[in-house]
Image (cartoon, rainbow, N blue to C red; front, side, top):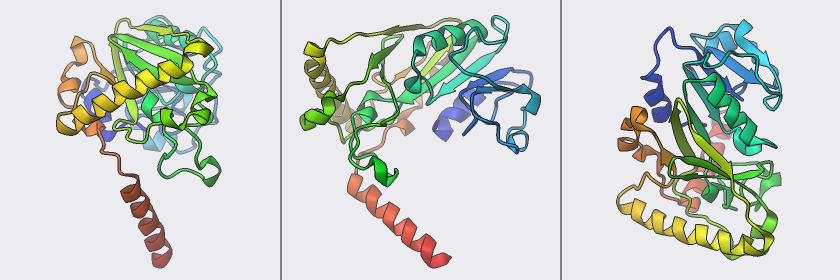
Length: 259
């Protein structure tokens, strides 16, 4: 899910005539979407939930089946949230996003969240799993580049590589006209070292951000959207698994009591 304040920010760049594509947005669609591309069946009430959307602009389509049936730069803005990390080939999807849109926003779980074995409020069958079992990629930001690193099971054999103090669950990547992306290959021999380096750098970032939020690690925006970087501290959360767990149990108890 995109944070409400982040959604409000890029909504401010759109107007009533903007054409906005939500890729993979069949569920939890962006409120300002005019077009949606997804493989799932559309929600029958989608037109009532999205003020600028018409049901004929819902395209039930495999995202990996390219090219998408849109002209170059047809959309003023595109959103791709919580989708690329699932896909067999996120690179070709990035190419299509760049082709059909003038600008856009991409969000994926941070690598820290994908290294977390204490994710709050998920199903019992996922208990003690690390990250999200159905995700294929770690996604990172390297300056102005979106980097995809194939997930492996090395974390399960090395508990010291997991991360519980996540801080920021989702990365935010804005782009305009063009953006860079690549796959980073990590050999089996270097997998543990790569995870250790990431964890060490993340823990340094977390300690810094507790005092003064450092937005540079998990957010990127070109000049057009740079105002977001000055006002994105809402993305940082202090990790407190006990507190979250207690809140969850209290809520469940109250819900049952009220019913």
